[in-house]
View 1 (cartoon, rainbow, N blue to C red):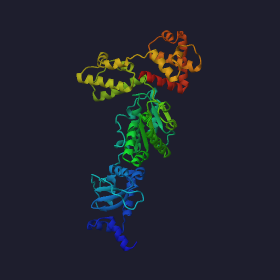
View 2: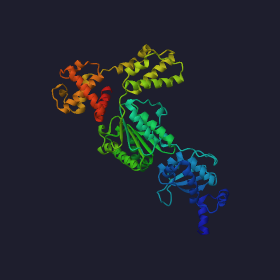
View 3: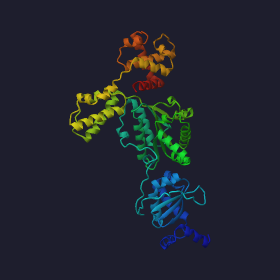
View 4: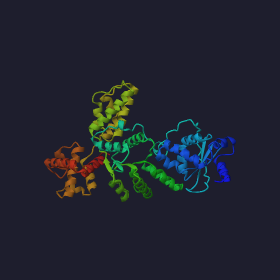
Length: 490
């Protein structure tokens, strides 16, 4: 390098102030690339290889003057992300190598471009840490404004496990550990208030604890669609792609809401493929299995079905009672003088069967009632305080409702439920309707028999037992029955 070129390089390095020049002069012929290279070595250690490669490595240091570090960035999205999450670390490392840096400015330039193009509203860091301050831990995507916030209450420690959700819980635990899991995506589905969202938040919390530098993005399908439409409107689709395809774990809640949205499904499909190809984990939830989501493209159904599909079954009495007991113990730690009469929790677990949210809401109302009025929660108080909830849950499911819903699901005529046909495609749905009538109504076997074309009670008993036996062996049949129960109880 000639003396003239070297001096020109130095002048690009810093401003013209003697203080700046003197400090760098003592370090020899350091170029901009030299300084940024040394800073990057420390930054990679501070933020982790994954964060460094995704966000910091694409930057190019172009100038250092008057306490301002200027960078060329390939996209505004990367500039904004770095400014929000890694500004402190960058300023600390640059200040360690020379004059104090207290602001960052970014200019947008294509990769490999010679001169950066000034962008409107340069990103400026608002804090000016001293060089001796430790680097702050980066904020993960799940905690940023890019995704939905995580609820601190939804963790594995307060998720009550029972037979209806034990498989979903075990699968969620495995995904939260990180590393190869043998199934991708994990697809959780079930009715309202059965714990899908709780498990998704728990996965994100646990995964981030185990992998602090990893990027986790959790959001609803509706938010995914909104951000996609916004990116199209603002011509920032490449930034959108970068945000969703550079995470370690993508979690999308209520994916059924993108059904029928062709452009959104197209982008979701390509995002899904890109992440799976990179070995990144995907967790999806919906209110039904992929094959049952109408309006969802077949290729997306196929991709979603490639992983592990887990149904969160309707709660049992034992699980509901366990949830109530867990919530009561938690509340008692805050209010030790709380008194709950004998049989109250059992009464609630028996009467409120719709979903866990309604159950927890009812218990919270009782706690508030007892706390404000300083009364013991007796059975009579519970009946009085929760009269409206109990009335709603007393809605009776009729045999007619069951017959209509089963006939609709299996695409047979309602008349066939009462008719004499014995063909398998008719007899099996009829037996399922008999089984559900016994499970979901208080009618006796002879009464059920009369509603099924005057059949003898022994025929009804045989049909009920047959479905009980088959549902333990046939997973598909068990899923059909669980879904029909959800639809009837909704």
